[in-house]
Image (cartoon, rainbow, N blue to C red; front, top):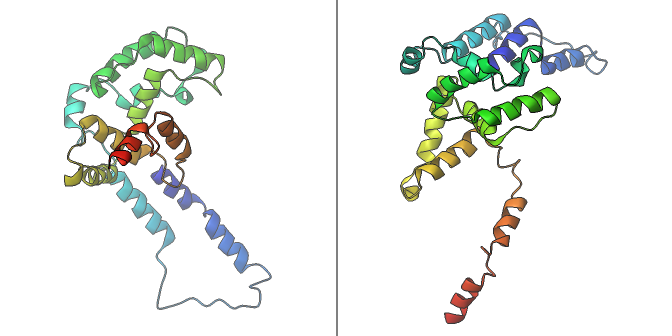
Length: 226
């Protein structure tokens, strides 16, 4: 996504650059004479963007990063397998229930990600998409598979970020966290919403409903005893 954004900037100016050009040519700055600063010369725009794209492409994950997987599944196109989970890549006219070609590829998905997508769930998923391709319900096992795909690090920068977050979560004070809790925390940290976007009210209400509150009878008893 980042590479495409920089490639697009190479073909045309971005919204902020266009806004600056509009302001310079507007009546507000009409009487102001702009002089090029010879001391601070700007970098060549096209060359800069080309180098950014080139270096981002170098950081993309390829078979050299995935020797074990590429050797084990050398006859499979992993990206093609993932497309069977995204209706945007389907030719709806060719899709039928059951979709045997997709179900065969799901077996390879199970081997790669060590997660099994229920065949019946996948067929329900197909039927829902065929009924309404704009708004459809995703069965639980298919949704979890889509979430697993989102956790794949597509470049070394994301891998480094993941290990950095893992080191923060698995600190000495949190050494009692189980593997499941650590995995859930990592998932939330990597693909979850930012703290600013998270609404704690529903979670707090659910927490209060199960008596985990300061008004809990057990806590009152402790206060009385003390």
